[in-house]
Image (cartoon, rainbow, N blue to C red; front, side, top):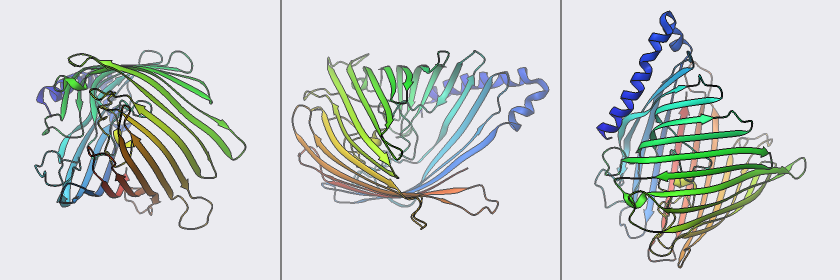
Length: 416
């Protein structure tokens, strides 16, 4: 982690923290008494078999988050959270910083860092000011997210204003000075010094129409090719079909061009449409997503939670220069009312067909997962539930630019 980045965050947050005693006087204790400790422990085993790399990856990692959120006083509130990621057991993988380049990448390096450190002020009616290191997830995280699937969160050193003074309308503006990526401070791009502006407006018309307009201008000094400006519109909604089933959809269109220090001169488009139905525990969805590309430049999403898009094998975290067309179908079922051990278990399957936007057949992928939350006995321990997840991805390439890849995950997690 860059010293300048963490120093800026600590300086701003410590100044804000210092206002608490002056304001609270004898009531400082209430800031602690009304606050709460929180945390998470998540273990994951990941196996990767990738053509072209002779060794299979076997990664066994554990993530531990511990934090404290203060009570609110005089409209101020603060939070601090630490995050520790360690390899335990199997360590045959390329974490992107451990030098094990003869293994496939599992981007979960060992890190110990301040994950969040922020202060909010809500003394202005219907407005919240937030300053410091924070998690930012906008909409479906296609552009801005924390990449929570990886063990090390992506966080943002930012100042944000959120306003809801107009009924059903939420406005956000944030300036991001640094992005703390999943790769950690030892990676060359672990800290991205940026001049990034996030503008986001969401208006709920009705259950059948929730519309969002956004403008994201990111200027990345260490990697000018990641600098871009993106403007778009997104719509989501749902409509009952009958007492048991409902129709839902999401539709989005965006335009992107070069920005800041990016030396390329380009304009690319983005389209996504995904209608579906759900009922009786089933969710079925058809989707088509297109990220434009002309063979030289393409529509990029460098700050996205990319694992949630274009297949769990993560072959397209960076958009190919030829662009990407992803036609997919997904189905899930959460068992209930079966009076068996299956109740509460969720089964998911997804199929993707990938093509280039300008040329190329990039292959296909099948993803499957089984997840379940188990309630633990109330025996005085701090954990109420344990989440268990089994997950599989099988990518089959049809283009020499990519290689067949299979991944398996076993994950356990608890929160308090």
